[in-house]
Length: 218
Image (cartoon, rainbow, N blue to C red; front, side, top):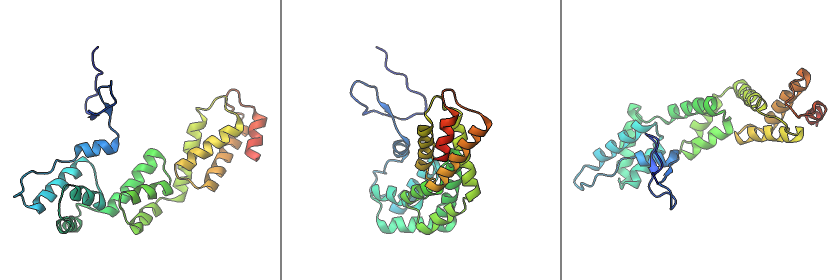
């Protein structure tokens, strides 16, 4: 039987489950697959090797200082060389955790609808220090965050059909909570969105408007 065709440009894990030609790698696995192999020449200058590795990694995507340090240590670069190379990259702006954090917040908020709490957690897991995280997340305007929450709820409501009002309310609040929105904001935004639906008589098929009104008031 012919093997499964692989989409061009998508790395495949050759150690996929038995009986399959491999499984697509997740984002983290793709990043690791794109990382350069260590130079086997023991005579190579460690600092030059570290610079080569950093530049190759940064060509794939932006990285935090902590991510680069982890990659270098995993390849056997001594700690003092890691510090020296990354300090120099900090000085010339090749590595800039502040710029990375602000770009990350903007991209992930508008692209995935993530709220400040989720964005802060992601940045901390990437090794960004708390002060920089707070500064980047603090730049996310509360009004913008609320507007994004309303957009997410409105988009989800357009796809709902035949869902019981209580379940619909819980589902929408849960969606916002998973994206990091505070419970008070999530509940208020969902209640207002459902109330607007009641007032405008825009009911999904199979949803009782009276029951929906009760869910809003509950």
